Amino acid sequence: MPHFPFQRLQADLAVMIANMPAGSRLPSEPVLAKQLSVSRATLREAMRMFETQGLIRRRQGAGTFVVGQPQILEGGLEVLESMLTLARRTGMDVGPGPVTIEKAQADADSASALDIPEGTTVVRISRTMMADSRPVAYLLDILPETVLHPEELTSKFDGSVLDFLLQRGDPLTVSRANISASNATADVAKMLEIQRGDVLLQIEAKLFTASGKVVDYSYSYFLPGYFNFHIVRRVGSM
Image 1 (cartoon, helix red, strand yellow):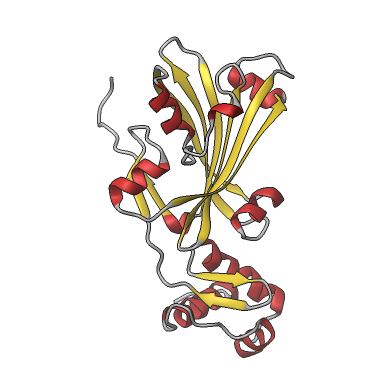
Image 2: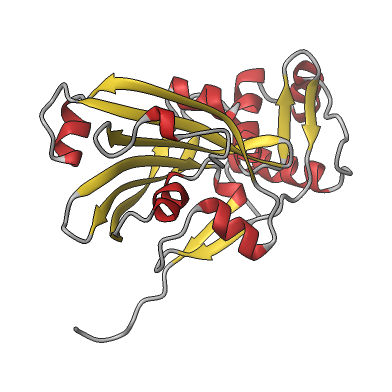
């Protein structure tokens, strides 16, 4: 039993949400805050956890609604495959949302990651992935224009840069990724329809060809409540 007030508030909200059928509308913030004897600011902070987990969803001008337990995309990270491929293999209904493809000049970070001069023209591909009629992941890939031209991404582009490069026949070999928790920036929060500062699972990765060239530098942000990634590790030294 939680002893701290904020933990107790989260526990009370968890019970309330669990006992309401999917689609139910929660009481308004003023009513719920009064009912739970907390300030609206404290209530809003506690609600963010459940929104990030996909258990509730706030709709501008309509209120906050119970979503229910979302379907979770679960998979290992030992073999590189796109989220769409993993979703199809596990039977989860995930699809691409709006895609933005634009040319830009490589900043210091992307230039260093791609081993190209700063200011080199790159192609930035950003998009969301949708599940349960809401965005659950935000993906950003940055590739040198010498590797991929925007004109190549026709209407058949399904949202996966990895799948596109593989289907094109690029000699891809490995991906090196850093996995961490991060707080949603204003731009990412807007794309995922969450609050700025909400905790997300972040994967920063570089995709290599057989010759050791980096052809793709990417950032992927996932709502924790919809994804469960794991790694199988061998015991013992190499």
